[in-house]
Length: 261
Image 1: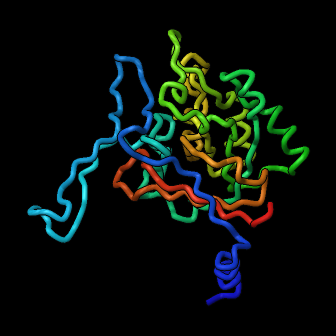
Image 2: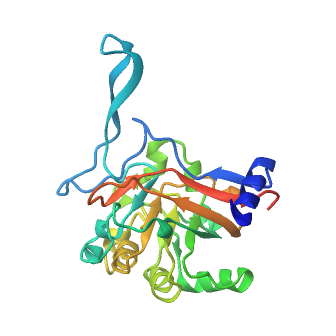
């Protein structure tokens, strides 16, 4: 075994490196994004027992699952959006595995979101963050820490009003900066999707999806425990199921963090 991998195993065993789970539990109570009635909607999670130590299978337990690809903590592949539909390696089964692991840059805007649930991260704010923490490296996951995962009910999490949902996200100029000038792997959020709740009315509509996926980048939604990560220094592993022609997938997102940071 290589020295580097041996050191990692030793650090994990000793607790010097901690594994932080950034994933929400997935089940029938998991909130699902709500779209206008004219569009097709994703179902919630349903589980049906196939057998549970009974006549249908005396020694084993397993279930049939029904859910949309973009349910719970999930991965958005480039093919998920029309701008990424013709790119190479744009589906869950064709993305090279090496592109699913990278350093994390965590931008904390929780105080802004407490004041304004429609807060948008701007390119200017990203540059301010970089003045404190250094330029965002190529191949990074940029994670937007908003505190939104602390909302424990579906009603509060989706936060839908008469004029649609209200939740934070990215300004179009921030998505362009990250995708085109910083060449990130993708972005991650604590909300149900990687665009702000009101983004359907932006120009272009849903600009983070439009820009990120058009550039072959990825999205991670419904993350949690971002408050346990440092601004820089963590490594994130975000591997979707290898679904043939998959536009996305529920996944378990893990971060490696040096203890004490």
